[in-house]
Image (cartoon, rainbow, N blue to C red; front, side, top):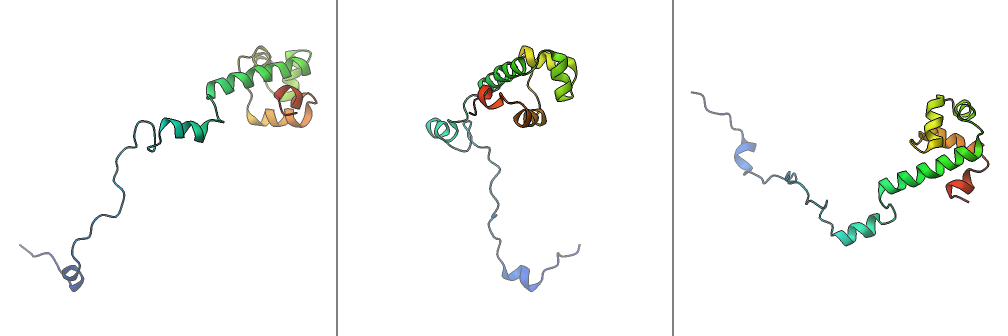
Length: 116
């Protein structure tokens, strides 16, 4: 049996403690924050589901005010008529590129979406 090689460095350095962090999971509330501090940190964000629903209602209102028919809306946004119909009925939300197009081209955007 051969002996493991040892050089001067191996003999001079005692075992060092591990410097990396342990792989312990964070507490259930996340990163050790209390409930009140989590509310302070993210209070402005609100409930994501409520924000989505509110946006969907405002978007539906904007589409109804801006376009006479789902077909006209679909031509404007370059989407299917069904997608435009879903926006007008408040069933779906658009992607960001369509929202950007609305910001740039629809005069009622700021009033209806709450930015003016």
